[in-house]
Length: 152
Image: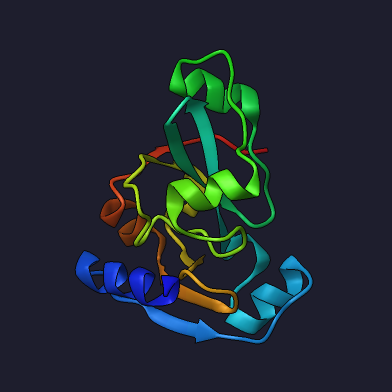
């Protein structure tokens, strides 16, 4: 199961984390309340395609969206796209809504918005209603993330 894979990867990372489990939610605000964090601290893990069979994870604070021109400039490409749900599952091993870099079937590079730094954040842990609360700086280090301003 994907939750076990994500939790095993979290353990292997050496990160100190706390798991939050909650019933289904219908909004960012509900997810934040269920996890005990503010909406900006809920981190979305988004899979982005650079080219055929070449993807990156982009970590985005819950209250922000990807700024595509900034991300294209950072990656030095003229075109990026988001894969459909089936492709995202195929390249990560996770269903949309549960995607996390931890335990992904492929170790794609991680790009993280700079607003994750210096705060406690909550990132998905491989299953609906399961999230890990971690220090943002420690998260970025554990994932060897490239940190930049990539949201708006």
